[in-house]
Amino acid sequence: MAHKDTMNRFAVLAPADDPVTGSPVAGEHMTEVIFACYSGVVGQLAGRDWKYIKTLCEDYREMFGGRNVSITYDGAHFRVHLSSYAPGIEFIVHEFGQRVAMANLGIVAEPAGAIIGRGGWWLRKAESDQCVQCTIYHEDGCFFVKFPWSVSTASRIVAIDDIRRKLMGRAQFMNKTLSESASTASLDSAPSHLEDFLQGHSPTPGEAHH
Image 1 (cartoon, rainbow, N blue to C red):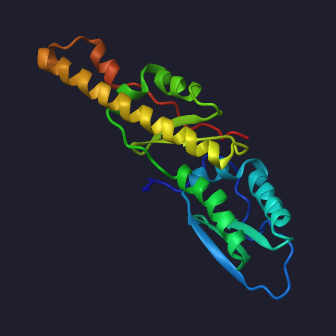
Image 2: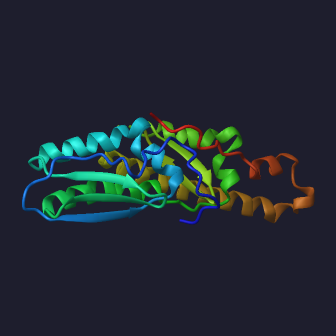
Image 3: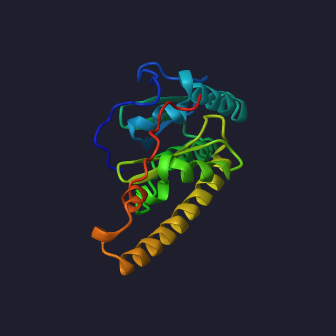
């Protein structure tokens, strides 16, 4: 996913040299699992003061007999250092890797302004249809979805799938509506409100959920 800048616009990052750690298990080698991640979504993934990362590491240690795990961010990637223990690696990839992938997944749907609606009303409606709290925003030509850090990975998958289907459906409807409008009048003679209709404003990502 290409972005014009790499500023963290959501929350303070934990320093890369201050990892969240667990306890080592003697005799086990360590491995590193890397997840590419745009810096602007790190805050919403990690939570304030890296609350989610700390909770994830605690859960990992409890589930896997105190095995060591640490998670840092280097400006472009999450780096997870953990024991070379297959069940533990699978847990991290499924629980954390999927979150990172979804946060970086942009949904392309056009015309964006018409989809968004004046003041973002349609996005707010799509959010309210979900069983969990979320925010849909438009950035760099794509729609993205963010969640409070406490929303489970499974719930995120369900919500994003529904939102994607809603976006595609509305895009199809808007394209059909605009095509029919264009066939009956040129843009020069179109109603004055058509320009406003085409230029709906998306809410900015704003502050991350805490």
